[in-house]
Amino acid sequence: MAKEFTFRGKTLDELMKMSYQEFAQLCNARARRTLLRRGIDKKLEKNMMEARKKLEEGVKDLKPIRTHERDTVVVPQMVGLKFGVYNGKEFVVVEVTPEMLGHYLGEFALTRKKLKHGKAGIGATRSSTAIARK
Figure: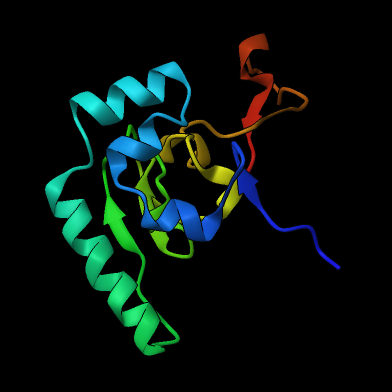
């Protein structure tokens, strides 16, 4: 039997019933200050609530909620939704799981590609040995 998920001693159902201020008290200091001072972007929150309603109605293929808000703290109301987080070039689809609670959306949409070192071609400089992975 799978172990039930808890966040600081609270189950996911208990977390879903909490307000953002109550959830902020369970987060670390940086996320707590962010939630208490700034909260969640109103446009993003509206889109989340619409998507949550569609999810409860049983719609299977929801489009990701596109956002540039990389510094948004993941709250329990986001669990199960998909977000298109902008990484500076494109929107990276991030499906929010319970383990992501308290982290920021930007942590899951990397802005830099991994680097692979190769052999420089004829007449190339030594600095051109770094080749971006595809």
